[in-house]
Amino acid sequence: MLPNVSQDQINEAVKQLIFNGGSFQQKVTASGTPVGSYLHGPGGLFGVEGVERDLFHTRISPNGLAALLPTFASQFTHPLFGYITGFQDVTGTVPVNVCDDPETAGQLKSCLQTAPFGRYSFMTRELELNRVGQLISRGEFNDLRLLNDPLAPELGATIFPSLSGQAQLAAGAEVLARMLELGVAFSNRIGRQTYVGSPANNSAGGGYEEFQGLDLLIGTNKQDAITGQDCPSLRSDVKNFNYTLVTDSAANPDIVRVMTTMWRFVNHIAQSTGLNPVRWTWVMRTALFWEITDIWACEYYSYRCNTTGNERLVINGPDQVALRDAMRNGNYLLVDGVRVPVILDDFILEETEADAAAINQGQFASDIYLVPLTAMGGTPVTFWQHFDYRAGATQAMVQGRLTNQFWTDDGMYLWTWDNVNYCVVWESKIEPRIVLRTPQIAGRIQNVRYEPLQHPRDVHPEDPYFVDGGVTSRTAPSLYSDWN
Image (cartoon, rainbow, N blue to C red; front, side):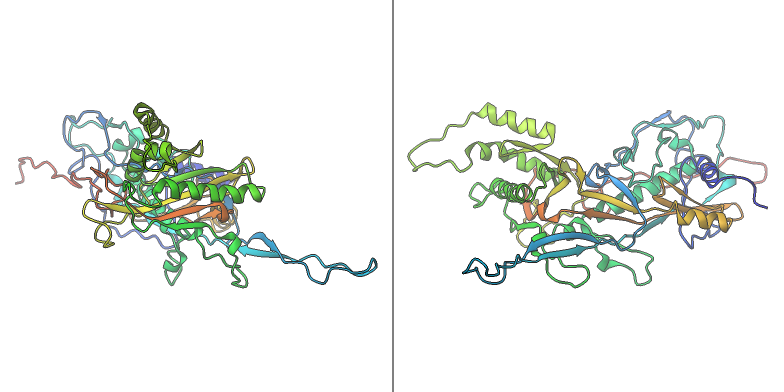
């Protein structure tokens, strides 16, 4: 008989065993060969006598849109989101006599949209259980503590696994260190997919699937999910800045006018369709925000001023500096008197001179997004959904006695582990998607070119300004002994 233990108790026990981490997918297989270095003991990254207790990491942690959107569970693989997209014109003729039939009111029209789940999975480096806990001598300390959490920006936003609850112990916990590596892998992949995800990149067998990123969701190709009929009233406001430099004073229209026009356009739709109040945010890369705020105050104060050419426009310099500094410190742009928040997200794809002829050396180009977060005073309209593993997966685990599989993060992540004798590997997967319920009040400005004096460090390992360094292994002590 099975012991009288609930699945919640099993889940909690396994989570405690691996410091709130774990892993799953359908065919995770240990090889019997540990991968990479350990933290302590012979050859360990910190297997050196006399290392000070406090450690710092140098990872540029992302703090972008993906970590700030709310998350909701879902069981539906092919949801249909409905819209009333318009009303046809009246039919018939205007009555002549008092008893004639009047015109017939026009029929309403609808459109259905859908959003598929993605599927992302990673496994930990394999470790040997009896290797955990080894120290080279009494001179090696195992009380190291990591002061700055590499996953800190994602804490509290449940699209990322809660692996860093004991991050201060990561340097002294071999399993948790591997879980933090797993968390970084999920963070990097999902952060970039937030923008460029496309189901067109799915693998043939379904092992890897992408959700729709904002480059698709904030777009002009809106079709009915059943019939393929065009739905133009759901189109987002997409503008092409054509690689114009944001600091080009001769640009017509300049970036301030383009962004202001977009802001007015989506506000008009929101106001006219009963969606206000809407909470929007601009989303852009860090270096682009620096360059825009350099010129925004001057352009804002002098925007569309009418002169005949003989007058002089006097602008107060301290006022410009104060507005610029306020926008940078508060992460917002002042548009038509409204402080519109700005989310800085360096997972947005960035082009260099190798990608477009219009980009010179030292210049870059990326997109700016205007994302509606809530509408009608607080209803979420841009959010995450994840497949909820708590229902069916829990039943399968209990019925099949699958005690090496479990879920975490309120059913968001599914985990498993496998071993060859004492060599163990963990694996995890998530099936998420972004839902944008009101694409008609979202916007995107493509191909915005900028030229910072110094480019900030990049978040993603594939980007050109990403840096790390250091070692992945050390040489174990080699001591004289009787046998050699």
